[in-house]
Every structure is written in structure tokens, then in C-alpha cells.
Image 1: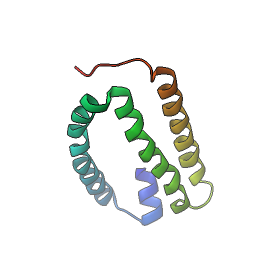
Image 2: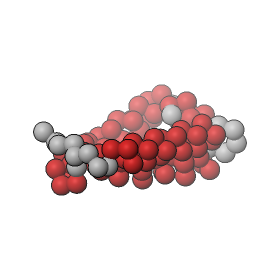
Image 3: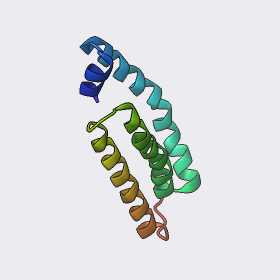
Length: 99
């Protein structure tokens, strides 16, 4: 991701560092909310239903990385979607308690 920011947008190392700092900081509330959501809908559903939109965004972000460099983003996104759905299907009948 850092290399892509450097190559695609001409970020400096400092700018890339600031970008990752703010994305990490902005992602903190979702980490805190995950425990509350898991108590309501279960651990597995929380994981799958939050990963799917993120993985779809990863695939959709691929048009911004025009050319061959977008292929790993598409492949990773589709693999992650497949993994999450397969795991959900295999485990959906089991109750995993949040402790």
C-alpha cells in the first residue's frame, strides 16, 4: 500500500506516514464497537458482515490502480470474500460466545 501511494500519488514517506496514522486513528472506533456488535449478533456474524464491505471496497479500489497493478487487489479481495463466505457457511449453525 505504501509503495502504491508513493508511485500513484507521489506521496513522500512523511505523507504516507501521516496517511497511515490517520487511517489507523479513524479505524479505532470500529475496534471498540466490534465488542458491542459481537454481543448482539455473535462473533462470526460480526467478523463476516464487517469484512464483506471492506473486501468489496478493496475490489472496487482496483479501477484506481489502473493496469496490471490492480490484479492483486482484485484477486485478494475475491479470495477474502470467498474465505469469509465459506467460513460463515461452515460455522453459521455453531454459536461462538463473546467473552
